[in-house]
Image (cartoon, rainbow, N blue to C red; front, top):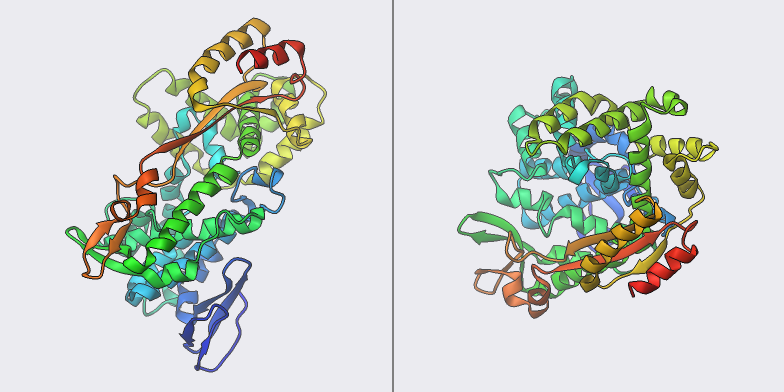
Length: 470
């Protein structure tokens, strides 16, 4: 952190907000939020976590998986995003007037909320059957490491006014894990449809992808945020003046999903990445030229993941299997990053055998993006059946030609909606006030396409089949 020393005098920051210095402001220069300023007290709250090995690991996990293969600037990481999320949380907390101890909790929770992510972020979750294990499942293990080390003693020495007790840390964990919260308004800052996470990643991803889909007026959004009183307690919401900016924000999220997060080429490459890992995991203990890979942390992890997938398909009760896998493989998982997989791709791409994992590695190394055939949603049931018949008849493998279908929802009005406080301080769900949000509320949109390996894309049989489904 850069630490400029200044006198305790009020001044305007580069975004136009009047701020008062408390001795020293600790500054992080950020391409999205500009000059992110943290008071000395806030710096003492978050810096021990930032300096910890678990948080530093996030430097090596890209925010958008394979997104930089399509949008070259998208090389930003979970590390960048988490610090930005923490800053946004501090801004929200200050705006709605949270007490110091409450501000400390939400800032820490937002800082470490993505600690459980594996290589290539969300894409890595697809190596497990039906996404049985997600990044949130690993989070308690990372948090337990803090509890079981001397971290608390070191932390509390730096924070004599605000010790981090077991009770407080449990509150932080509950906010991250979407469990019941003693103060709903704090949990809303960490995880809701108007949380600091989304406010940061939309702006950040839009900036680094070089697009404007994710832009909205963050400063006006912040100005319009307020504590809204409901029958169930205080919640984070907006005043009636903020309806327009929240409409803009939700449409920005919808457009980012359609055009960036669910970009056909990005999804096709991530499908190839997962197929590469699956093919490798199935053969790693059987194929002699993979013997050295089996000795690595990633090799052992993939081998165990394959065993879990096989076992989970034979039972409907997977909770015991899942629990054992998490416990037995956390030591390897917490060391993995994008570099482990990139290194493996490069190694296999140089091999001359025709194993599927090697073939896919060559395509990933050379950025050989599959050919995309876009489909309408209504066509998919017909195409799915025809595709299975075609692959069986012509001995094509799944990784060579695949139907990819990904649904997404722009806004959920039925469950935990964004609340608007009107001129009489009455709370109403946003979708009851906004015609635009009502129109998209609780509706699924689906990205659907066929991804065809470039090597077979011009094959006469493939070309003929593609024409037959159009």
